[in-house]
Length: 337
Image (cartoon, rainbow, N blue to C red; front, top):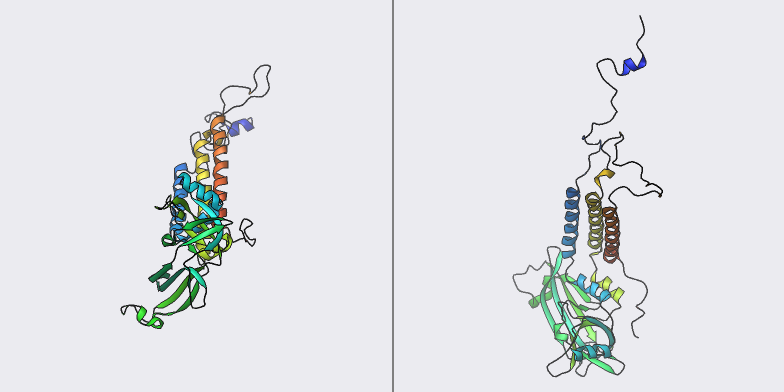
């Protein structure tokens, strides 16, 4: 009696030819392919979270961005823009001057003083009373001068505040009786004097008398800062550095998820093998008769995906740097002394 051969043990008379190992055609791989739509949704959720955090930072964060982004022009150029009727949001630097300045208790010549009484509510300081005193003033650069619409300065005022912190009971009759006396409170004074240099951002226009004036416009506020841009951003962002970094991290995560979803959506599906078994590819040799190697596959979607990923990566990197950038230690070289 003859012994069975190795081929008989593997195949057997009733089993047919041996089958390749691995999952059957059409079955899913061991690690399922993640649906591009799910990745897109996760990316948009992360992006919405970053937008929600940015919304809690308040309008002052926008002031900081404008200080670094607005194009700088000379006062003479701002005057020409106003006379030409061109609506442009620009930055000018110069010395503050006024013929109607007033003195404070320390005999400083002031052009603007804002006094705030604030109370702590829901973990944030809220204005209880705001007093705004301002006189007409100008910004001079050499022999050129342009007036500033001081009455329109709101959240755009960036100076070093003078603060006194206590409780409501310390303020006496300046607070309504229905406010609890033990509620945390502070007294904040912001000053601008005529002996300071300043940065102003706004739209140059002509006032009703035909005089050039810098004011708000194009949906952006009038900004006046007596600080270098880096120091102004530090003052504006006080207490919100952690939230700013978290928003930046969420932006990066959202970008990575969107890039992955875009790659899964655009790249050819043949790049994800269904099984380890070889698959017949249409055609034969990749080389034509008498020619060098050619290309097989959908190249246009692949190229578009690479270009899109590169552009999205650059944009996300710039956004992250802007959101998480700390104040520079170097002074602004464009600032006139």
